[in-house]
Length: 280
Image (tube, rainbow, N blue to C red; front, top):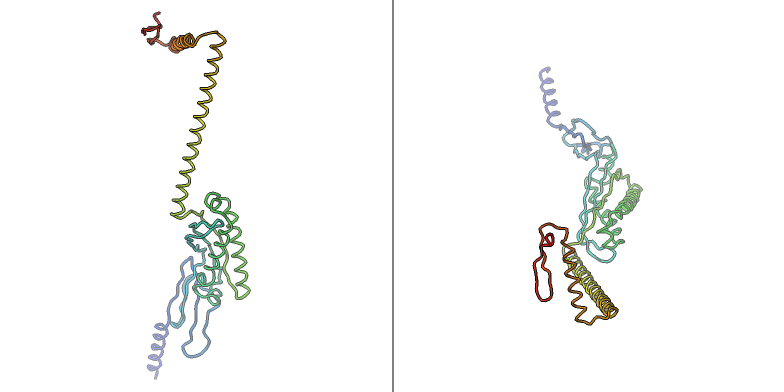
């Protein structure tokens, strides 16, 4: 009889060991046990989370791990329209954290896919709505506007989380919201480059025209000044031209007179002579 009891005890011990499983969490995780009774009793989510180490549970108990550190979720927006109906590309990021020890409540109320089912689309809609209130040039060139966007989106998301809490506890904290600077898509960027090139070409042409007009005015003033000087001196046109030749030759001499070993061509009447200014 004693041997029978020992044998049964060994069988029960082996059955107990083989019917149990070891659940473990890493340092950045906490785990949720979901109990499923084999024959009788009540199952469901165990209220206490496994926050460190390991625990043995019967094999019918499920185990789900959740990150207890902040996790960043990124949403990509392609061709989102801003205030002036220009399609832009951008990324938005929201960093969320499960409140300490609250993963069982999150699992019970919202399940393992809580972000995709309850946060994602609302976050995307809020980002799109705020982007649509700014024009393209503000979003592309003004970095400071994103500080206001961050504040607005955070407030809207917190209000949404508060609404969820009114339905069933939603133990999620907003750690950070970041919206990257928007950029035009390839087609818009190509058109912007063309527009910028045309604008630059127009500016260049206008400046060239201004320079030509200024040059014409300067030449005209010089001509008036020369004519006025010629009349005041009582010179004929031929005499004035010869005088200007002489002045030009004098200017050439003045330019090089203090330089060593420099020769200059000087026009004297109808001939040209080479003068060494330092020797003459």
